[in-house]
Image (cartoon, rainbow over all chains, first blue to last red; front, side):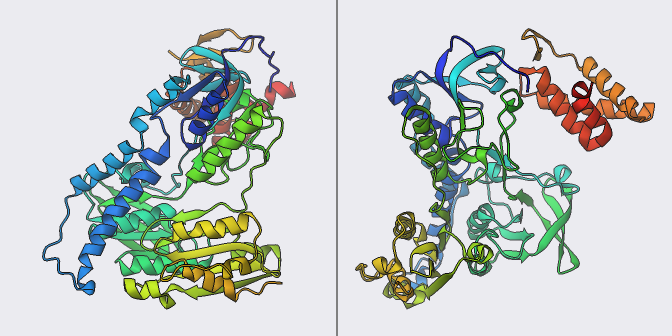
Length: 461
Length: 89
């Protein structure tokens, strides 16, 4: 990298590039501390989460779950003569949910705090200057929170045949008759449930051995069983090798068990992961990259001392809650003498659906690979009083602990799993023994009783 | 119009012909046939133009890095030469 002279005057104390979960929080905190802050955004304020990610999918899942509950009401003695839905009204509910998050008023909220909002694509000209259009803005410090974009795999015929990603999937005007999803991660798990409930014939092809491939196999197998129950065709160890067709008929060819299969569907969705948005002239700053995104230390600082990064762009964890924590710590470490390191050992991972899947800490596979001693305990939720009164029997709670009984990881497949997980996240974050949970009274009848039952099976020394 | 920030700090309009000429010359330098060199240079210029669509201003270093990365995918030797020859000489 060529050497640049540090400017003597700056336009801002801090420029935050990206207004999503990480950037937005950081801009608020810095402005509250009296810093002169500019927030640069190239598309909608608020980032992916309220527009394409967490909020629209959860609203659609709620609508789908309600439909499923009403369809299955007779098991509780409730008679529902005709059950139908209007997908435009469902979308209107989803749009209302998005608007209720305040994303439309966000610019006034930022401005009220004295944050300058600049629309445009930021590009570093030198380590202290970004170009926006033809305007140059200088700042003492930068926070890069540009998020991520969907990975498009290199499959012959894919661009020509046309496909959607999570960015379009939540805004469809009507459910497709059939949908093929390439990839079996969290996005596929959620959208398969949404559209299968609304009557779409859904296919999933995952190249690895089970769904949710970065979690333990029993979690993936549970997800597969849940989807199969809803009529979703899941193929694991299946590699899509070719796509063809146009408009409303796509023909997808995939390899499974050494044989080639063909499926024709109305719509094709790519859900093969995300990549960090690093195309902002970082070569002019000397900031180093990893294979996954911007390289940062434990304090969210890049190798350029005045440039920090947070959120999806560092490629560590692509969840909103992680981005918020990273953004918070980045701005703290910029201005405070006492630095706080980012701790990833108790980050919850939640896959919303019916049932929800929630995981925190280490997986059994990770511990096996690292060679650490560990013990596990598992209990099905069917033994719970709550499961009996809900006529629901599918799911389990699993706790992984070290040989002393200190909880290292946990997986829950159950209704309200994401709510139940916080107890275990707290225990992992603060290195509590399983017996601490086992000796805590849990109300009867609740889903969280399963956590106490499993914790009591772990041997504590 | 796209602008390029030069090494000295001044800016000038982006000229795709300059890029084409440099890529073409690099391809010829690694003994790629003339016609193939033209095709490669055209392809790289097209890629760079597409990449520049969302940008108003970039540095000359950015263009070299992006074009070099694309050239590495097409012709590894030419890409290596394009990215490093200024350092080598």
